[in-house]
Length: 499
Image 1 (cartoon, helix red, strand yellow):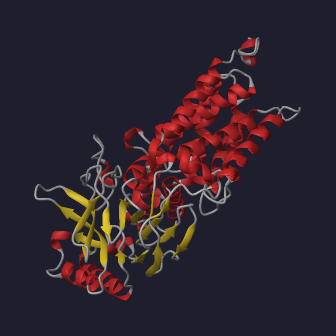
Image 2 (cartoon, rainbow, N blue to C red):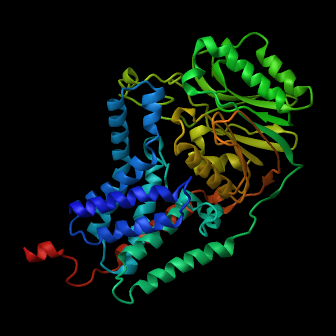
């Protein structure tokens, strides 16, 4: 059993290489195959749970280890406490593949086709639950690994990230369950080819159409070290840096990243916002900047403000990060160990209108919000361009930056719209509606990315149905897998038969 646990953990860890920046997109399929090959050898749900747990720990400890950087280096949490917090969080995330393993071993029919359907359905439902329960954490959902050049990427405008994850789980489970000592692998290989061919057949199809004239944009990357950003003695220096970058990189729309101004809006020097406004309005432009706002009642919002030729417009972040931006009930003790500025925020509210600049309407999402495909799809319906403003300086030079850009690529695919990203330290980029990165700035460099962006309108199937297609297929797969009768004499494990 120990060797199986080690192999499962290694397979889970290897899955990380399927995501950015490595981009070895076939690896998650192989890792899922390894998982179900190991699960197929288990005789009890407890063994399935342990194998799934080991696989999940390998994936999440390897894939979101950058959380340690935020807690220890910038949050001030002692290293042992930070490591413990990351381990506990990753253990929670690993409960989802562990539950899949336990249920699959307990419910399998010992018929390859039925068991493959059951595996894929359970996997997809578990990923959706992970992205939903307790506000959700869908990071490293398998579908994110399948952006271009993966042949599964064209499914995104129809099925979304969870539907692509269903395809990955189908292919991986089929390969893992198959008996490779006979001709039995042929149906599994055929299934993989059919899934790939279906994606290739959809490649190149445009679900949306150009809308209005292109918009010239300047996406500013301020590159301010997180440990220095909130120092009161450096505040004026950072305000000058932002102003200089806005002046040096004119465009119809200039964008500063999330919380570019490291101070509450009410505490900005007199006339500072007016100076920023003049810097863009003088040539008929607009500026979108990230800043914290406090309402009269005391509520603090992580906001994006637009000033300039189109007038004042506002968006406040709605989907907040647990522990980083608000404290879940009974977790106040966390802040006795971690020092996170502005960690008591208030959601801005759903269904905030997009910002309008000339004939383009821009739906803004701030940092973590673009993890939630259904929410972005709802906002995209009334917009022609998506804009993400982020500050990933909290995570240093880690996997967080390329992984987050990969998530933005999936959102562009699902909505058929360009996704712009303005970040503090990276990765500032322009993503095209087909999920490809048209331009990107090097990380940890100060500057701006200037581009001409064509807005698009129209509704993709995913925008219309969101995750309902993927969930419906997953439920259908589970039911179909369960309806198949077990093979006679094989529904009792070898260990029980021996007993």
